[in-house]
Length: 285
Image: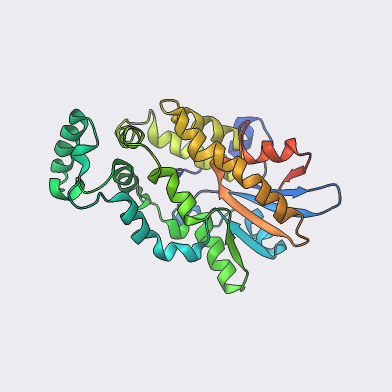
C-alpha cells in the first residue's frame, strides 16, 4: 500500500553520470528449457509528465498472455471498506487508549492545526492515519497514472486476464497485523522529514526509469533504518513468498508479465537475487 514517491533527468545524462549501462525496470526471465516470464518493477503512482513509460513495458505486455500484479484489481472495489473496517477502532475504544500520552498530545495538536477534530482522527489506528497522511494525491501523484494503472487499462482493452500474487487481505495484514507499538512507530516516522526529500524522490524515479534496482534498494533500505523489522515485513518476507508463485507462472507453459513495486527488485533479498539463486537467466530489456 505504500508508494515510492517519485523527477526526471534524460536517460543519456543519467547513464553518463552513473557510469553504468542499464535498460528499463523490466526483465526477461528464462529457464534452461526455454520457458519465459517477464518481470517489471513499478512506481505505483505517477503524473502525466512521466509518460510515455519506457517502451519495455509495452514490449513485455505485448509478449505476454497474462498480467500479474501484487493484488488482483478486482479486489480493489472493496478496498476502502475493508481498510476502514480494519483501521477503525470498535465503538467505545479510540486512539488515546493505544498510544503513548505524548504521542497523542502531539497528534491532537497536529490535527488541530489542519482543522481535523479530535473525535474524528482518534477513531483510527495509527497505521491508518499514516496511510492517510502519505496518500499519493497529497504529493501530486495519481495511482491511475502509475505503472499498474496503465497496464490494467491496457489489459482491459485487450481482454487480457489479470491476477494477483497475494490476496487483498494478505496485503492489508502488513499494516493491520502490527502491534500497537509497531503501529505507533509507523505513524511517528511519517513526521520525520526525509533529508533532501524532493531530491531523493527525483533520484528514485530516475533510478526506476533506467532500471537501476540497486540504487532503489539502497534508498529504500536507508528509509527503513529506524524500523528494520518493517522492512522484513513489508519487503523481504513478501519477496520470498512470491518466488514459488513466480516459478509456477514461469513453468506454466504460458507467458506471464509479473509487475511489483520496483523497491522489491534489488538487494540481497530482492526478487532478482532470489531468482538468480535458482539459476534462472535474467536479461534486462
